[in-house]
Length: 212
Figure (spheres, rainbow, N blue to C red):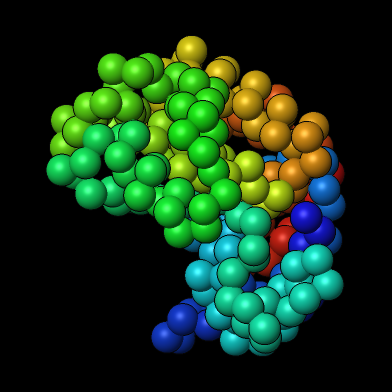
């Protein structure tokens, strides 16, 4: 999925959290967003996801302007900080409930997503109320990938993951990009960025200050 960010600015109260940001994101690539807290990484991800409406500028997804005919990219998976799930349901039941919205993912797709991020059958049949931080993070990633999105947006995806799970996730993200999707992730983990990113975008003060 091709994403064009054109001169996007966003003001929240009196703070300019995005300041005239422009960038083109192409298919089959992984883009790493880096910068200190408050640099604009999360706000850029939220803007591309349609969760934040720009004060100025526009986000164009496959030739269509976001918030014109549609508010969210049609084929998108996203993780944001503190994603919540009904705690009285198991991980599996949560994704089954979500799958009924678009009706494009099968039970096999759901179980495949769990496998790709290291949630065992015992884990996915456990109620979310009993999940550890790492298990909740894995469930969040599973919900982002189980419908095989063409655009994948991840905010600090390895938070709470152990080393083995982190490497499993990195492998999965490479496979998703190689299959044709656009992957954009924000991370403070330098290893994540170095290993995964085809392009690294440095942000500060709501601006892109460097790219390589």
